[in-house]
Image (cartoon, rainbow, N blue to C red):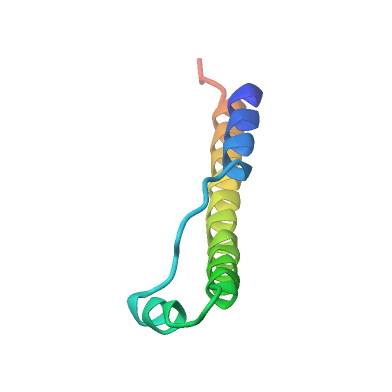
Length: 78
């Protein structure tokens, strides 16, 4: 379990560069020379996308931990 979590964490931080602009933003920013603003907006969008995934992952982890703990506390009645 710990090994899987470590691998997942490493994969989370080793991401490939992606473009996350909407069509309207891309059209406006492509007309600019150099593309520095487009790169900055792209990085900002990806940064803002990270936190909802971390939040959902954290909630899912705590639910998993609570369910695992409750299964371990059950005792069969003889």
